[in-house]
Image 1 (cartoon, rainbow, N blue to C red):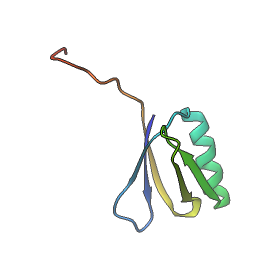
Image 2: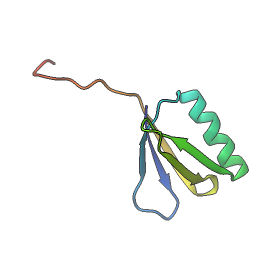
Image 3: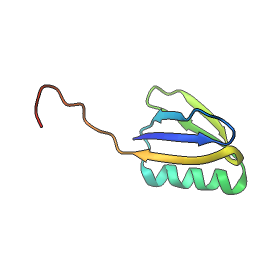
Length: 73
C-alpha cells in the first residue's frame, strides 16, 4: 500500500510504499497523533521513517496497483 503523508509547515509530502494493512496503519497513526508520539514507519525495503505525531497534517492511503504491460484496457 502506498501512503502519502503531509506534514505541517512543509511544502512536500512524504510518500512510502509499505506492506502493512490499512487497519494497522490507521491504528498506529491514530495513536501517534493523539499522544503526540514518534511514529516509526517501515517501507518495503526495510527503511525506517520517523515522524512526529504532532506535526502530521494529513495521510492519503492508496491501494497497491498492478503494473500493466502492453496496450490492454
